[in-house]
Image (cartoon, rainbow, N blue to C red; front, top):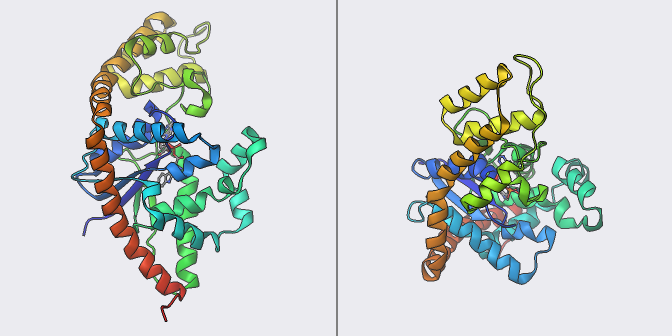
Length: 332
Ligand code: TYM
């Protein structure tokens, strides 16, 4: 039996290089080896109250981009989370055994309380239970995600184990975050601090659908400094981040070349950024072209979503049937 894999991306806009290297690049490889479920986490995105018209467009972006990146719907189950209502049912059951204290201590919840104090809704607090439901509904053991999701996986294990203990059953397996390289990935942004992320602003992200002109403009505006002032000095965060980005899109020789220039204080950031932008363009172009083609094919997208929902529901319904039985719901 193949191991089961689940992962999802919130539809909050277009996919960026962080999503690609943290998650999607693993999806592409895993689909050949595992029983994979990759979904579009539209229920999760409701915590930020998208308008009805934005929501559908965002879901479409992720579906198109999954396909453009090379996820094969014949091999993998691709679905929209809200097409599988069993997820919401499992979320309800898991919430009964998720405690306020542990939910309040989650780093992502604390970050949101800080960044959006006017919208601290119950969906944000219970976000880890919904994420656990996404994973446990298919009894997955591997979850390809970036480093930022590690704590959510730990909470998923806690909730699954707690359910098993409560109902005295060895039912849910323990899922772990997965990346083909030994470490989970954190792709930095262009603003000199922290990770690439949509909430950090569009200028901080390179989207898979960005045109060459936009990429050149964004990279040329990326934060740098006045340059190294001694040989072999440690790189400040903003510069280190650009080197990290270069490592993911450029050849090792190119990275070594600029590293060596930096170490002997001969680097010119203009040239460095030009090279980085051109390598990003080489990486993005085939994906961007496929995005443009696939986005036009509405009937294909409809067929993929419909087929995925059927397959995902089949697996989810089996779990819900068994979970209901364990909990003690019985028909008369
Ligand atoms: P989300 O939508 O914020 O991000 C989607 C995926 O992209 C990864 N990612 C990154 N990886 C490395 N560097 C970055 N800068 C970067 N930015 C984003 C994220 O780690 C994630 O893998 N809660 C999840 C979505 C989700 C989910 C799930 C994932 C809902 N249910 C069940 C796995 C299993 C989220 O908000 O990811």
